[in-house]
Image (cartoon, rainbow, N blue to C red; front, side):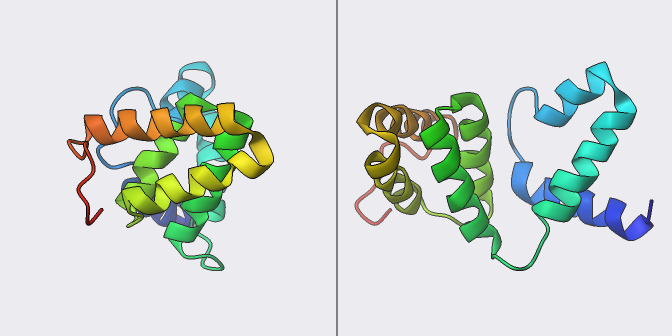
Length: 132
């Protein structure tokens, strides 16, 4: 395993997940299998999320939309934090979630908006200001 990949993984994890409260997926994986947790982290965070093809904010908007449609609220909240950490605005995130109503339905969209509100409340960014 290269030192560069380990470094990139650590930097990307810090960028995305700084300030996230609670158990992160890596911590969960590690509690069951340290080696597999390392391998998953190196691939997901160090290779997939660190790719330069899409800018980090775009990558997180795609992730937020997918998780909203799939109704994976716990993981969605993690990535809403990550999206805010990499520069997405609350309004951009809300818009991406609104867009999912067309493909995932209004109930999924509503669940996504509730998750966004909860994340913004925890971060002290709720209620939204007109400029947000």
